[in-house]
Length: 430
Image 1 (tube, rainbow, N blue to C red):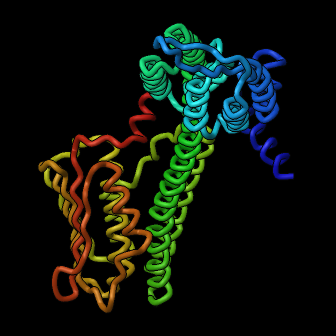
Image 2 (cartoon, rainbow, N blue to C red):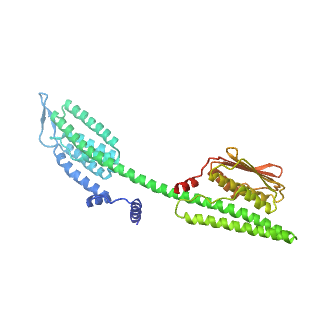
Image 3 (cartoon, rainbow, N blue to C red):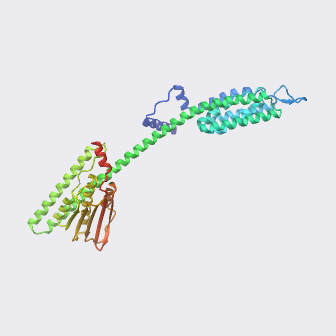
């Protein structure tokens, strides 16, 4: 059941990555059945390696200092060489997991072959050299071959100088095993390099898929945050003004003033509806595409005029002329709107709500100062969070907090030349 699930997950992953099918029926079959492939390789190596191991030699020194061969293989030599061959072939079943161990065992078997009548060798070094190049690294394959052949050469010469084997046996053993090891290493380096390259490409493709999903999630999160800011700015300010006008109309006995307040509340509600429709239109047009630039925010003087109509003592002072980018102008309007709304909501007894905008300085400075603050005022609401995000969006800063008895100051500094990513993308789209 677990194999079926893993196979299904692998198929889904290949479909997601759109990987092509490996060429060749035989190659695909061996790739899906690695254990069977290792068993067949181990059996073939066992058969080819036991044949030369069945004939060993027993060297004895002659009185003249030479070597003579005594017919009849000693049983101990046959057993030792046969056990080494068998153990190495069994280890071949784990050549993918233990390539270095199998590689060392093959060289030990190659040393044992030096004691044969005609030193030869099976394909053990060929297979193990290939395995270490494919399943470990190219560097490990060349270093292992250099150490192995070097050690084999030293041992062969040592055995020759101690009159244990002949020079011909030593040279045959060295060059025979060198040929097998070199062929296996060259093939393994080629196959292993291609295998690691394909794995790196597939791994990079998986990373790109993950990054694509992460970018989509980040974009969706950023868009949700933008929508939340716009909704809060539109609804919060308008409803605050409507509540103030409605309360004023209900509290006064003057019919004319009540009618004016009701008319102003209706006008504010209609303006909020217009802004909401405009915002929904932008969202509908940009669905599934790059978010467009936000709609035009309320101008500071319009926000102040609306608050004045609701009966709040709001004043506006500006220095210089607006010359900032569109994104900064949008942020200025929203910051003034939210700052005045907070003052109206939390400072019911305010005698002064002063809005000061300095366009002449760089960065542009917005200050909203009001009195009439009573009790604890929270600093973690959606409005202040949205203002911080909006200021950071144009590389600006914003601070808000008490500055004295019953006074509250909101100060924002926005670089005049800052461009938001949204407006940049909108300009590129045009």
